Length: 303
Image 1: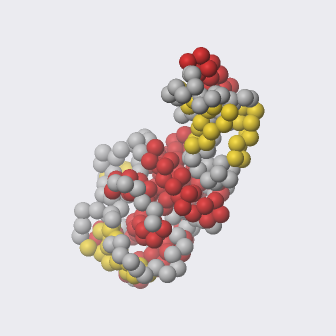
Image 2: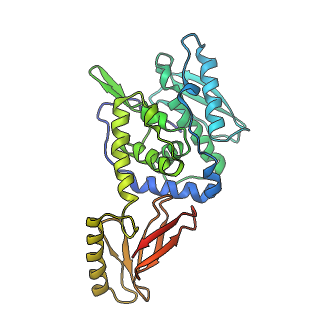
């Protein structure tokens, strides 16, 4: 498993992996449970992964690997970190454990500030392997890994490793910078922990702000009771169309904000939970309270 190429040339932006990111958050909650996710309320702190000026390379890398093992709650896993020339930023062989061999690109010998970011991705691969949580394809698994690293408090370092200036830049991980920002913003809403104060990269902060805007909009989408006036008007119009078009057993009608209506008997609306992204359903009958069975969040809705 690899942590991706380390160049910022031609960096993809926006939210091309958004559906997979949402599925990853749901899968994480399903695998760990609400109580399990709540154990990751504190992120890795910058001081924990900072490289001292006089710190020996291999000893420092091993120390930071232990920080990631602790953050991801893998007390029985031991990381052995080495360096070599390679195409990707890092890699790990997923054996049975308890010892795992992580290789970092040799360039990190000179760019030690980002060793924590590379190890966050690789140790998350180990965590997912031990949880038995995986997606069908390699590309989806890399998105899953970045998403879980960010949501469980280690992956903000991957976003902070995104830098560009007049002489060059770099990006680590498989999510776009904005997608990292989106996942971190969703985490921040759950734990009340804002990672913005830790970013050393201006580009990382900007990407986080764009991701947070999307996460905030999703937290106010209909049929949630806190939706804005314009969104409520669109929802009302979609509801009228659904009532006029749908007959029992007909295909669903999808609204512009990701909700959809169907009519197995009476009209219902389904939408994604703003916490775990699990799709929820509710009868269309005005004010209702919906409880997510995955993350236990109770939502006030106006259907």
